[in-house]
Image 1: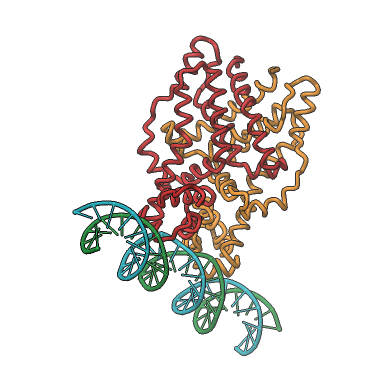
Image 2: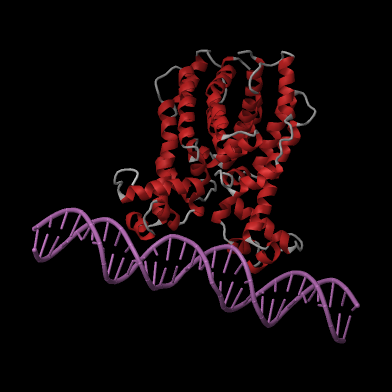
Length: 204
Length: 204
DNA sequence: AATAATTTTAAACAATCATTTAAAATATTT
DNA sequence: AAATATTTTAAATGATTGTTTAAAATTATT
């Protein structure tokens, strides 16, 4: 055993997360999970009742894992510039640790009638975006340009998350090793905030 | 019949594309495709030999459908500003027509050892990015700032494509209808080029 | 130590999967 | 019109799916 006497349910859950993140719900079989967790298919159902229940548990946790840090930092009490730098830095580090996380979350929410959309709809009741409020305040003070700040929000998320969603295409197109790709992502920690801030600070 | 006597193989292929785009390879069954094409499972295999062959055909076409317009415009003989506006406009229109296209392509290339990665590796032999050459030329003339232009490339694609990959999350978080979401995407046709160009034109 | 509760195992379950078969129906060629 | 080739159908194939069963092994309780 690698980890000292890890409980069976945790062993299964961790293995399931690994497999689900790589192959999605449809591409994963209960037997996959059993093998990767060094257990058997009966145990998977014994602890989690069904493949679907296990999946939902992992999906919800992955959803939270992705968006909780973002929400937390956006609601931090920090000056605009520091907040953007921190957001991009933290998210990049999170995604470097878990590069398959966003594809897992977004791909399971791809279609309007996906069960995961309904599942998520319940919990995410608009917690009042402090970031956009902050941008509006700065705009009122004349520090940044006045625009639709939802666009800024979306653009930051796009520039941080998209490269990880398209990792393999980027690696192919730009002929990069994994290490080189990660270096590129590190460079974006400076590039993205600079781009956003330069845009915000220069009037249209 | 809606379309006058559409050939069977085309009927199957179009239905298959619809289903694959919505549910991916793993989430789609041969029976799904048969039902949606108003044929039967034997005909699917008669015309395309296997689910996998049919899928690969559709995947490769979808990959081309996504990246051919980009490559074409990036290699257009247009001034920088016009090129960026055109690229963002055309891509947005393409994605509004086919919003599930990028998720389909990228999700099937999510893992390093995905068959689709190998499949694509063959065809996409670095056709010398004219856009980056153009950026370097402009930088040499002192018209724009000198940076790693791969970052600009990635940032444009991110800002255009990512919103469609995360469409359902954005709609939930910002409480948008489909029409409102598309309106937001239309607004980005101005927002994205303005952001990129403002950044490029102002020295660090 | 005996009993009860929990966990693990191996085997089986029915349902569904992709694919194939072979006969029927249709279209094409001679 | 007869013969041939192509397309379509219905049924069956064996493999794989998620899930369940019931007995065995282990752990906890009395």
